[in-house]
Length: 158
Image (cartoon, rainbow, N blue to C red):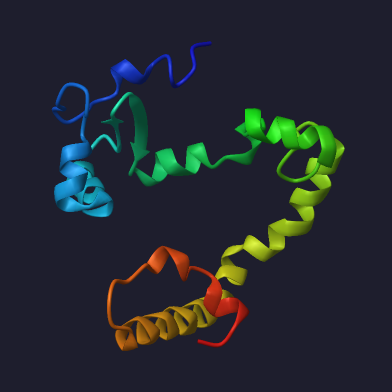
């Protein structure tokens, strides 16, 4: 059976530039803006974009998304970096393969925390933290380095 990567050339794609692919669109429109624009151009619900030498597949059709999220067809395989960590940390949630018992245990323990109901419960807290960060940034003068503030609102008052 051919993998999705092997079939990548068959998925539709907007015109791309040599070498940079679609990066020039993202620089102009931002990633989300360009994804929304490109998604409207492909009613099939799937398209690919090139980012330099890398190819990304994007799915917008709800039925295709549901199929991709079907856990019975999911297999977890840690990448090379996590395989190094596995040597000294053992087989845990991030380092185990999906057929290993410890991955199943960790997955079942964490699953309720990421359910739709749980996510709805986190919304107010996340909104409050986002509001605090925006207020903090509004008070600052000089350059804003937002990436350094991610998560700090959860650990300490602003």
